[in-house]
Image 1 (spheres, one colour):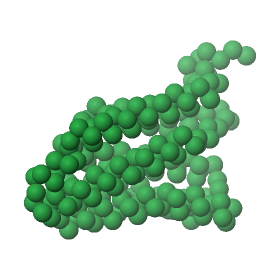
Image 2 (cartoon, one colour; image 1 turned 90 degrees about the horizontal axis):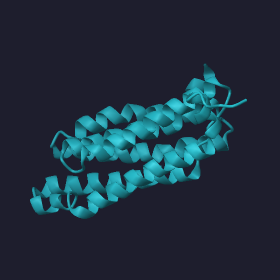
Image 3 (spheres, rainbow, N blue to C red; image 1 turned 45 degrees about the vertical axis):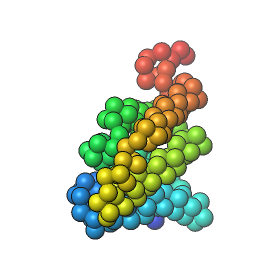
Image 4 (cartoon, rainbow, N blue to C red; image 1 turned 30 degrees about the vertical axis):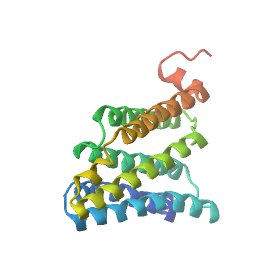
Amino acid sequence: MLMLFNVPNIISYFRILVAPFFLIFFISDNETLVLISIVLFVLGAFSDWLDGWYARKFNQTSKWGIFIDPLADKILNSTAFLAFVFEGIIPFWMVLIIILRDSFMTFLRLFAESHKLSIKTKEIAKIKTVLQFVLIIYVISVYFVSLLQNDATMLNLVTKDYIYYLMLFLTVFTVWTLIDYIKDNKKVVQILFGYDKK
């Protein structure tokens, strides 16, 4: 029970708690609330580094922490992407692919754990998370400025082709991380689909 509520895990819970408030505030079209949503997301992104650093620094790593940390990232980022879909900034199909990938990886981790196996977070997945954080912070910042200036031209900066292609790249990269995980965890996948040969 203690390991469920150590400092690193509480920081991860904070990211999960931030997600619904970010969504509500971002789609409010209220400048103050959108600004708050930016602050919340930046704090959430920072907490992703903080919980890992704290766990290593004070030797508070745990199996639960290894699971909940990337899950918190997935929840926060997917919520942000859904907010962008709601505002017409990015297409839903890209977000759907990301959510399906993340859901499968979460299930795969749980399945592996139930079979006394483990799936470690890979460097490529950490890079994916950082890239998502950077794109999300950029989009919400430009969106906020467009609200302040009531400038449709400024708002178009987040809906132009380059944002679409950046998101497309992230979507493809996210799928690639799934393929990479499957390649490195063939035993878990084989057991899952009943192809494990003993």
